[in-house]
Amino acid sequence: MIRTIAPLSIALLIGAVGCGSGGSGKVYQPKTKDTALAAYAGNVQYPTDMQATEDASVTATVNKQNGRITIRNFSNKAIIEPRVWVNQVYVLRTRTLSPQDTIVLDKGDLYDSAGRSLRDQSPNAINTIHLQTDRTLVKAKGPLFE
Figure 1: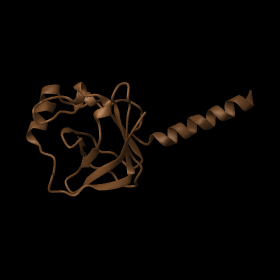
Figure 2: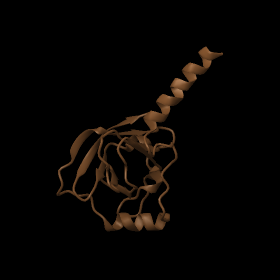
Figure 3: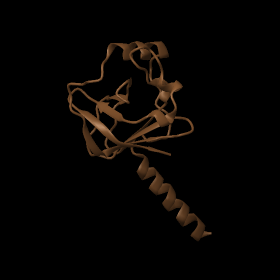
Figure 4: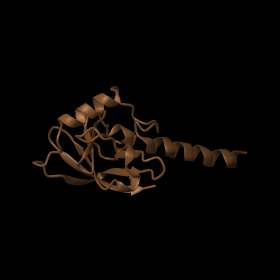
């Protein structure tokens, strides 16, 4: 009995450590409605005047079946309320990613400047994911497809 419980305890501990402070596995739910998300996207532009830096401590994966985007911040610095840009076109402002934190986004919550949702695109069409703060533009490593 002890042999079967010990590996399970270790697996649960490893899973809890890997999740980070916000990595509950729940999908991030924006506080605004779809129309407000689309309106926001229509009022912001991808920052072509900022140089994107690739940061190996920020990774992105895309679920091929449901298109959910998981962003992980493995660094020791918070990413303050970033705008998440997919393919430099679709955008969503999210909550702060604390150090060692994870956020899961529904692709249907990202919109382009014309009010079109990423929901209608294939997950395979996701090529790049950038996180923009007031001072930085970070290219997430990936995306990897799962």
